[in-house]
Image (cartoon, rainbow, N blue to C red; front, top):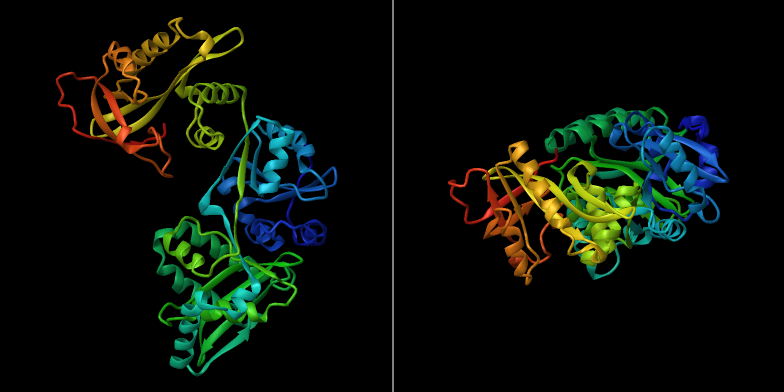
Length: 462
């Protein structure tokens, strides 16, 4: 096992020796972020063969994640050491926050052993610092207009450096802001605790910040720290929304007060919050930084992926997304022949107007094993399990254009042509890729029950 140590203030110089010279702009590699969110993520660090490795608890839970190793050369060579560390904790290896380059290094050295995915809600918005400082050109005209209206309406406004004597005012403004965002209470409470830690060690963390006053009332504040020598990360930005334009003003003026060496400003993720996404896009990021997740695949997942690619020809990204988000060994039925997976299907849990509704998904037989009754064997077992578990309904979508499949599945009691709509937390397409072809055959526990004209199926993880 690797000897990891919790991130402490005294570790800053050692950790930043790696991060400051790196070209990685990921906000999660800011030392201040690691330290301030320690209560949630329990971040720890180690040096492995010349690379800085950060290990943390994903979403504050039991699952371990590892940041992209930071150092000179190809980080893929230390992946076996990280895998062994994860296995020693009874877990698979999950590498979080990979750049495009980091993903390719691992993909090339460990061919086929990982599934990769990028979550749009967690991608960083990185801006050219001069764009935020100067708001140049036509595309920034709305921002300049916003600032001009604010300055005209509040001529007594002023920008001030954020200093310790103003921290209490910041916390009060944050509490007011949080009360207006009750839809994300848990995240914001965690953020509040991170802010308290930041203010308690502001100078030691190398933080800098600014605030806007109208008269004697603080209407906005922001602060952040360096990710590397040329990238600044804005950790927090809050404003009193009663003062229209306060966010735009603090954004611009703070950027102008940052040292010129910062040519990029990272304004972090949008967390999938639609309003926040619109706001961040309105500043025209230079790049939306991918942060890939890499998951080391178990043998059964590798076999599933290989058979899926052989039979369906789907893009690797689609298969990886399924494996990372929805695959479970206990929901897959498979048959092995000659030491390899020869056939499979997946029993996926959904809820519909019919009740507990299982979707038979990804029925596949390797070409060299077709005609041997393997799919028939799997379908019989699927129907047996559906009856044993008390499923209310069971359905599948035959491959469009393959009418013979309707006869095959009809032999197991599935029938009809019912349009299906899938509802999932992330919009994953469980259908054919074309909504008009998402037409299902259906089996009902109660044959006398009326069949719906349309089936709306909501993912129900079990």
